[in-house]
Length: 122
Ligand code: AMP
Image (cartoon, rainbow, N blue to C red; front, side, top):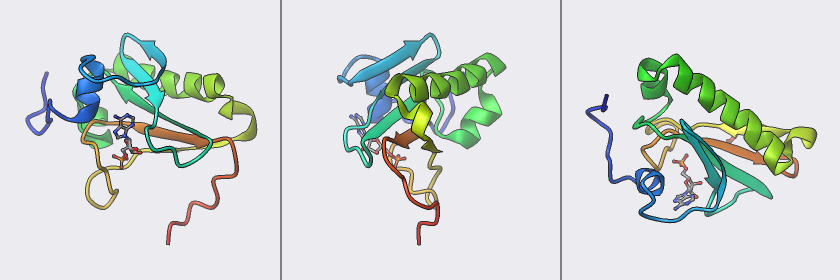
């Protein structure tokens, strides 16, 4: 089922379709994990569902339980595969205007490899 607000030409949709490359870390039938092109920490990967979901609002409303479970499992694998698991890390998913979301396809940022600092952003 497609979401009426989903833009199929967003950059992550193109990565999923193989139209543009990515530095892939991990993949499963429901998810893809790749390195962020502009890393904000020594470890910075993006975990995305392969389904067409704009953001966490959309995903949590429409995705199947299997897709939702796969997304969480992919985040857990990413922590282990990157080595972030031991030292600790931060997971962020920006939503909409207040969240400063740039790419309109759900993604979780996993940041680690050094202290990420306090959560307070202002
Ligand atoms: P957000 O503001 O949460 O939407 O973050 C979007 C993220 O996508 C940013 O951290 C970008 O550096 C990253 N990004 C944009 N284009 C690409 C790309 N082609 N490959 C990997 N990461 C990308």
